Image (tube, rainbow, N blue to C red; front, side, top):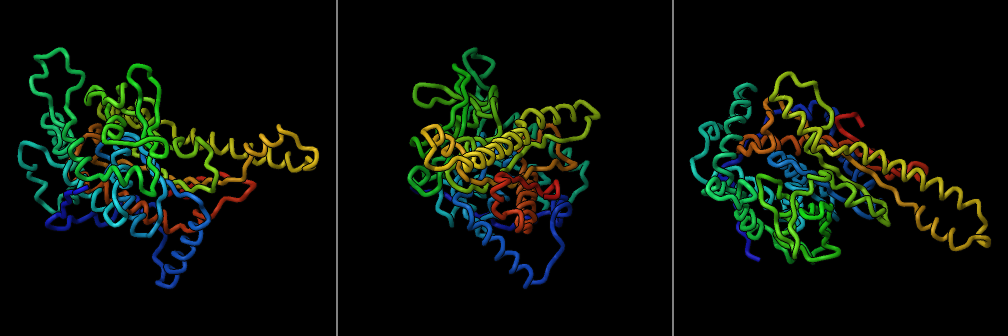
Length: 414
């Protein structure tokens, strides 16, 4: 499939140093020590049968996931499976629907394309290379204006306002997402996405039944409509038809696709990079704008910690079952023992968690503030967090059989 790509005329300058990098990156090491750490990292990675990338929904914050994939790719971390919700499903499609050498380029093209409004010229500050380093209050006002422009104008290659919206009672959304379909078909090779080596799953909600449904390339052919359905958040975006049914954004039910990967108990040791765009932890709001922002954080973080705690307890119980089964002589085992053995397989899971952390200039419009400068900040933060995470090579060691489920988080110190 022909695919248009775009390379920026000049390289945008990233922030000199992010808060995430200050918080979690190990001290600088010698080249020999760095090489030894890299060797240890890849030795640990080789112990897993599958490595998955799990991408939460969060609108404009999804550029953070682009930076994460760029850093993983630069470190030669092989990804076997991607799972996404909403904007995470779009990033997942851009990854799975391109050959390895083109994935970062496709992600960059998408994010450069959609961080422009379709009507008026870019905002003046977009022309200043040092705008990323302007004082936070000034960048906060830039965010307000860019968010307002997204509401009024839409975003190029993504969505635009419906004309004559107030004159028709039959519209079910404020915006038309036809531009997104065109963008996906130009940047994603859906034959490769379906038939290639990387498995992809995305989730959406059936509008009529309210059921949460997963579209998985291992079970069905996926097209642009499956990706768009996963990101059709009402009332902004319209429901998307898949087959005979109509679907909305999967984040209405669960914004964390971790269970798409681990809920079925993979039959192999599995490493998961879980990328969240909403932080469940936060400060007490001091005004209404902070209330709206904090509400979104809590609503869309989807209790990720609860999911990982639940999975950890389940795996500890599987270990206990294996211990009990070992006390029954093989000659005395029956069909029930065989079922228990199937349930208690020795598969170990390691979840490495990366969470976008709000910056001082982030406001309640952070998920629809598609300004170019904000996108670059998010991308740079994802890249920095990933580099700092990968520097902890010991985190990627295969969990012990007695403790088959482990989690690590850069911002929690391990």
